[in-house]
Image 1 (cartoon, helix red, strand yellow):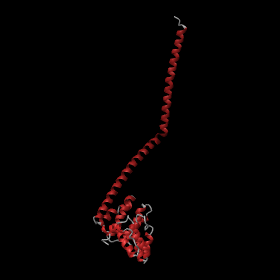
Image 2 (cartoon, one colour):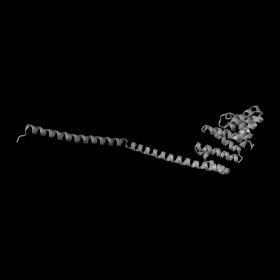
Image 3 (cartoon, helix red, strand yellow):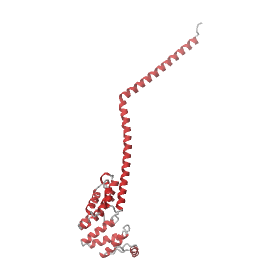
Image 4 (cartoon, one colour):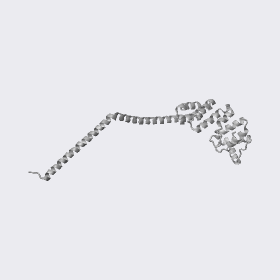
Amino acid sequence: MALGPSNNQSVAVQSANRERAQQDVFRREVDEAVRQDTISTFFRRFGKLLIAGFVIVAAALGAWAWWHHEVTTSAEEDAVELTMAIDQLQAGNTAAASERAAPLLSDAPAGYSVPAAFIAAAAALEEGDSAKAAKLFDEIAADAGNPQPMRDLATIRSVSAQYDTMEPQAVIDRLKPLAVPGNAFFPSAGEMVAMAYVEQGKKDLAGPMFAEIARDEDAPQSLRARARQLAGMMGTDAVDDAEEVADLVASGGAAGQ
């Protein structure tokens, strides 16, 4: 039986479709082979570097975690040592306080080493070693990396520790920058500068300084009362408000002078 034109066309179409399908399969296989070859080639060329990169990243993450743990642990240990040093100092155990503070002076961050230096210096003062105390205070004051308030406080404590052995002008030179009304350390610095003026016989400079301290509302009451009395002795009137003076006297500011 002969096939009609339509049947011949149908067979041709089916044959073409099968061929196209086979070509599609072949193309996909080739594409997959090429892709696999590309991946294989990539890993042959860069696999070791890639793995090394992963190892480095993992190591870095591990190192960071270790570093963070070590820093946190170290900070906690430093805090404990500092607290125990403070406790020993408050209890009057100066030797134990110095022993606790000593390791923090060089190995701990500034947040712990500076307070530790203050503790060690305070312990030295309690033991009567003013030279050692002054040296520690001077080291704090000289370190530009320390907070300025800490440096200023250390300067005042250093001068206070060795005031009796210093020349009046040396006291003035070191503290005059801090002996300015409005400065947080003005009362303490101003009192020592004023006393140095007295030793130099400069009552005209000492009197106004004492008067300024007496007027400083942020100064301790006892210091204000003492400064008021000394200003009067220098011939300077520091009494601006009689009621305020009465309050100072009533508070016991001058009782212990």
